[in-house]
Length: 180
Image 1: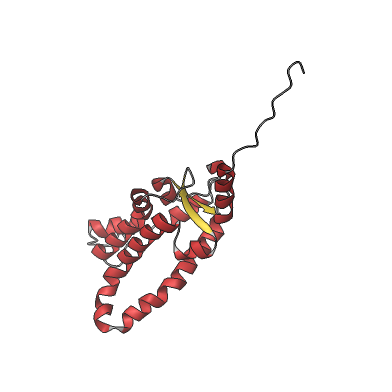
Image 2 (image 1 turned 120 degrees about the horizontal axis):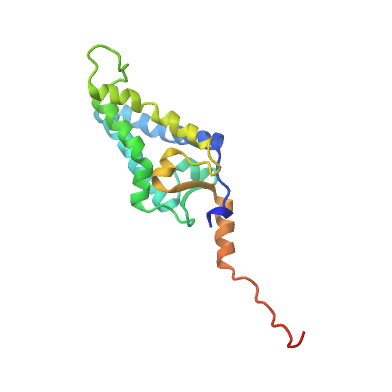
């Protein structure tokens, strides 16, 4: 089925990431208005977004931005991802979040007294950039996290058309007359 799908390219995926940010920032702002919640938001917020993203990709095929803009995250047979694959898809982000919470601000690995965690955090901070650049380097427009999960970001229209084509049986062939 995957050969029948239209893959979403670099700039639309960047746009979706920005739209997701615009959609979720008001929720973060509301949390900051509540003082007790604000103290824990910096810790809870990133993991909460990752958990929500895993659930949405598994159940609906995408984050809010992808759903609004007609994109879906699917595996090779055109199905939404299972939970393990959706977790693998978010793994790089979860690792980056955890490193930044442990190490604090990103520091240069050449800074005197930098901890090993800070050094790893510095190098890991380049992963999102590499992740995004990989999209422009392959035909199916897959990012690093897509390769980890076995996923593809495709247009909903092409997914619907491919699913419809698979449910409609081919037209029957007419029997050929004997001796023709």
